[in-house]
Length: 313
Length: 250
Ligand SMILES: Cc1cc2nc3c(=O)[nH]c(=O)nc-3n(C[C@H](O)[C@H](O)[C@H](O)COP(=O)(O)OP(=O)(O)OC[C@H]3O[C@@H](n4cnc5c(N)ncnc54)[C@H](O)[C@@H]3O)c2cc1C
Image 1 (cartoon, chains in turn purple, red):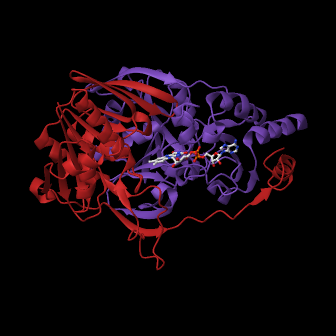
Image 2: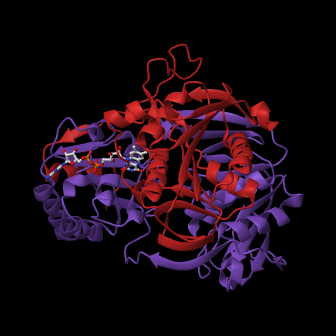
């Protein structure tokens, strides 16, 4: 089977989600091509070409592809799709935006957020915020999938494979890019961090996030995360939301502070290896999934935890 | 300007859905059903655009079972003007729904179609994008802000790295994210008024469509639950256990 994988990148750097999507693609076949679409993304193509399991990289560059807009990107993928049995992208905001458009143009029913591949046409995926896992058999001749990155181990790096340039047909400019507001952070990326420190409504304010929670994250070299309630209240920006409708994380250690543990939040972190919960309410549902629960006021416990860890190193 | 809003009836997101004890499917018999929360946000946005004098009519449409009439009534009580049910008791996969909505859009000729970014039952996050493809329209998914100005819409989208602003030529598709607005509760007088608003029912065959399934569900299972952990008594004990027992701290 031959599989086309859409590279996830920001023109300068290849995102780790791509190595995970390649890993999923290898469950389907062994002729894996990676499509790098963007502008000025030569380094990305080089990085993609050195991923284990990849046999070829296709690079498509153009102004219309600079910001991964759905319309030209979908047209490009459809134009390239001919020889492939499956098209795979990670469930990133780009993958989720463009792949259903591709699927509909190909008259295929997409399989979203795949967590396991049991056969060439058999896929497992969570529904109802992860309360249920369904296994579906695709009846379509071609498969279009988005995969949950945290469910697949990234492939390693090996020798470089060939890179080919593909033509980009002019695409009607139905939508135009205006601006990106990129959240800049010195901290590790939330979806690939080994440790995540998350705060909820219990944090009380943006200021507390910065002065109480962030120092703990920095002591641990951890990424910061948040519940929807914390984002809605404006304590932190939207890109930190963990959950059913935010980011899905599975770090070695997840520390939830002042988070009650609603099912929509658990959907985004319950595959973490070790979960710690700090909450003053002993009945909070988060304790049902926590390996280690501490019933305490976070404004005392978090600084103490930070202090203990900092003095130990 | 006419706005079409697509809505879905789903299980209440506050209820944990389980499997029937004999494993034969989802146990939804006693579960309260409601409008998909993202769709409520889409309806609210459309109603606000009409209240602001930008939209002239808000039409809500659902592709689903007879019971979805209740969901459409809720949208009418929130302020939508007219409802349409494309009735089917079959499983409604996003591709099939997008085809039906595309046919409806052909008749209604809206300038803007709003949908929720995902339905919280199947968690697919596809219908809006698929509809945009079928119509050949531009799309802006995961919207946290929408401004309509003449024949253009400006949308701020929530993306992995932060936010992105797009300008779209109308007609266009916009899918709503959580922070687009806070939907209103329908007041009792508006619930009464909604009973008199027009609500039409059509069949997929009226549009020459058959609702077909491309994915066969071969198994449903509850994921393994995490083994219950322990409560620690102090921060010192927590750190000790993370180091020695869990081995996640050096
Ligand atoms: C369609 C939909 C999608 C959603 N998607 C998401 C999602 O992706 N991610 C998500 O997180 N949520 C999501 N939600 C929201 C979810 O249902 C919850 O409302 C949300 O997760 C609650 O956030 P929270 O735990 O921070 O707040 P709360 O539930 O209010 O909990 C706050 C907790 O903090 C504790 N606390 C307060 N003060 C202190 C203190 N001083 N010390 C210690 N503990 C303290 C309290 O005991 C409480 O347990 C979604 C909901 C819907 C309907």
